[in-house]
Image (tube, rainbow, N blue to C red; front, side, top):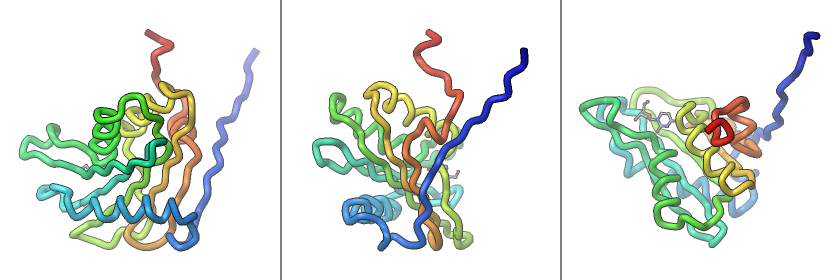
Length: 161
Ligand code: THU
């Protein structure tokens, strides 16, 4: 018999960074600071990400482009892999993402791409604890999602292997 099911996820919307808890403001500030070190001469879309670990370390990353376009990498994966490469056994608590476009003002929150969600979700499943995610545009709202699972339901994971 057919069963109708629903996927639901809640998330929070903040009007400005000042509404976030102090530690989250710091994390977002680190993500914004990381934008300035992005290498994005082809898209002119600069992304910064900051990962907070359970040991208190904040590891940042940014997008790194390449003349052979697919060889470039998103900020979120640069940040998470940098964090897990240095601290493989430390829990990942949160990631904040910020952007700057040299072409137009980004007036809505920029969600991570599908490949970055899949990558981040891997570590959430590995540690069996949610990773909070904060993302924003250049102006306007900030979104806080409670977990990667919320952003990527029906994901492929190790249970299939
Ligand atoms: N980009 C990121 O860094 N993160 C995302 O989630 C989406 C896109 C980068 C990749 C590329 O350097 C530029 O933004 C335009 O796609």
